[in-house]
Length: 402
Ligand SMILES: *[C@@H]1O[C@H](CO)[C@@H](O)[C@H](O)[C@H]1NC(C)=O
Ligand SMILES: *[C@@H]1O[C@H](CO)[C@@H](O)[C@H](O)[C@H]1NC(C)=O
Ligand SMILES: *[C@@H]1O[C@H](CO)[C@@H](O)[C@H](O)[C@H]1NC(C)=O
Ligand SMILES: *[C@@H]1O[C@H](CO)[C@@H](O)[C@H](O)[C@H]1NC(C)=O
Ligand SMILES: *[C@@H]1O[C@H](CO)[C@@H](O)[C@H](O)[C@H]1NC(C)=O
Image (cartoon, rainbow, N blue to C red):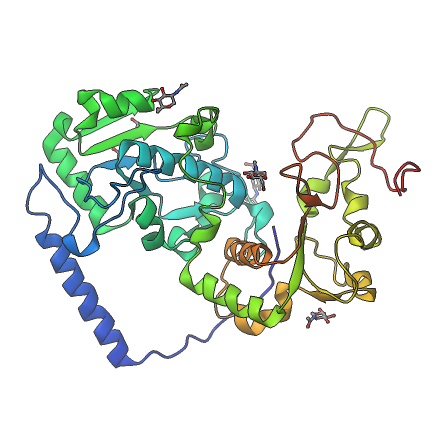
């Protein structure tokens, strides 16, 4: 995860009062229009003006209007669960969110998204997280989250799977309607299979399914992805749903970079070592610290990236000038080179990470830290998956490597 430092901002750009008025009037009109569509409690349809295309995996009949039914997994990704006081990084939470969205597609329901995403303290150096004090897990969570719609374009997501936020007027309306309907409106379920929720009339006709997901993490519900027909969204789905603001900033930077390559250098938290009984440092990724140092990066990437090319580096390494030795052979750029573009846009580290992902995806040659796939280029050959075997870190070049 990249680290982004920014001076505190104290000036808000003045907005034109006319623009503000126009925005308010449009919002009010839209809201009244939406309300007018809520005149029936048993049959709720999407307003005709916002026909939602429902993803249907190869089925051509994907233009129909969904009868509005809702799926709710809770107000926090991966909660209740072990991640409540120290949530996982953005990538893990995206796996969990994607899993929930896939279920909504399967059940043809609108997904009620948590309006906030927890930012792992490990991955955020922007907020003022006081970890020293006795603040409860709840306090810490409340201090370190970002708004879901500061990361994702919900309208864009809704073209594939309709979503609403759990702090929206829509959601309050669904809640009060389901309460009025009682058992005919809502079911609170746990441990019931997707197929039952879809086929069993006790659930399939309800306005709202309130589902308690795995207490370990939401993505555990999608652990069994062997049946390919149930995998409805690719890993790239959420990364490509970044807000328009983030997409625009990424496009501007890509244009300035021109023809470029990119490397993602994960250091930071994954370098952690621990001492064994004899006091020797051990690591889960014994070559990682070595392989992500500039001298070794230079050697490793020489066969993939010609000298003189521009390399965009995304990294969570915070030592100033750490990667400077790479400029002996390449033109090096970081997101910090584009603070003029980023400062007005980036408020938290997850936004920065999403933006850097978009830039990395536009690279001609991309080199990751680990291999996700046999064909990937990577800085290290250490496996990504935590092997649970703690080994002594290696800092020298093995003789059998070139
Ligand atoms: C934290 O709690 C402990 C015991 O409950 C107390 O002794 C200590 O002073 C507290 N520290 C702070 C910073 O509040
Ligand atoms: C959903 O179900 C859980 C567990 O039964 C319950 O604690 C929670 O209040 C329910 N939420 C809603 C919005 O009904
Ligand atoms: C795969 O999932 C689909 C949809 O749930 C189901 O109809 C099908 O029977 C499953 N196939 C296998 C081999 O489990
Ligand atoms: C980016 O900034 C670094 C200093 O932080 C500088 O060495 C480098 O030349 C800059 N790269 C570009 C492409 O401007
Ligand atoms: C591995 O790469 C192939 C070819 O680029 C791609 O089709 C496949 O989805 C990748 N698998 C994973 C797990 O990323």
